[in-house]
Length: 472
Image 1: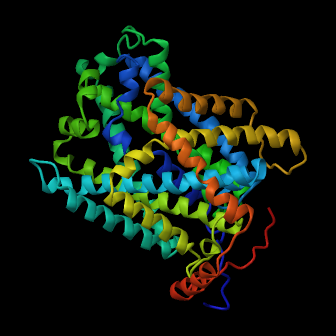
Image 2 (image 1 turned 45 degrees about the vertical axis):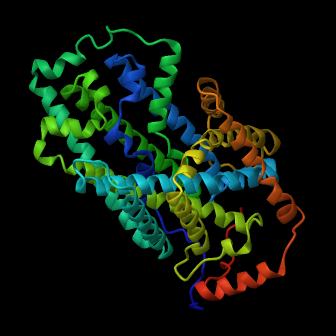
């Protein structure tokens, strides 16, 4: 180790990188592939579907502002986890950490497999890609992302910014092309927007499902709480990033959907497996190859950021004594190497055993439970610690509204498609207490683990980070 260099997660990212980080997290591959869920549940009512997209942007903004209070009040990496521990104590925060280990690994494995599928499918134009090459490529992509994260944030930041520019540029071409087609005033492009609200209106349940489809498309806005400890001046940077990224993403989403509707009929959109490719075939056939490339770049950047975010949760878990000390150590690049290695290894097992990913998908409804607890925590701390320094206070109606949305995301899957897997997943989450009680609560330790920590520390050249001058 370089004795003259402090080893710690440093605040090196400002407004530009933070905005790019938010955009990458919000805009996923779905806007390229299948932005048809809102249209389907809006009963192909074009005007209503566009209103739903705009409404979902406001709902997602309210949710993100709730996370902003958490990230600004507790500006550390893994702020959501720290916040839950502060509000509800060790057991609940550990179960949140336990859940994120498996949900995060399943998410990374799914993203790697999807990225491999889009990358390898052009070589098999007349049939599905074989499973073995797909898994091998997914593993190669996953470990590449792990290595990049282990080399520090410089390379990751440049790749993220490049991916953001590419993603926004492709969506910008689709958006501007649609605007140009509408300005030409041809009847075939304008007919979907004439009397746009005069078609059948959806029922209440269908409308709620349409809202959830759009709400998911804007999810990811609260991801900056994972890296709040690496943002410069988080009290100023986080709000600026939010109010830059959300209007930009909202305008892009609306213009892209208008462009799709200017070229394709609602029925054509619903029957297409990849709306962006269908649109490109119709408008710019020579650039059809760009869309799969854009999807691959989008998935790669999302995989990169997924590993980055989740490694910070286990890092602070080690710092708070709820994970082995080895996970609180950094390498010479100030990267939580063992946390990155843990997630990449777990994700690799899930790629090889793809059935595990299907099981992990059932855990996603539990993520909404932690969102509900976070909103309750905001209200609880407002009441119990009114003098806690809060540079930013969210309007209290926003946590209540986010709580209602998250409760619906928990209840609706259970009502619409009840399955025993949900019970098994709840039992699996509670099984985390079998590790918490002996190893965290009673601090049970084995000498072999201490020896293993020393060996791993020497092998990977990692150490406990230097103390930070900041106080939480």
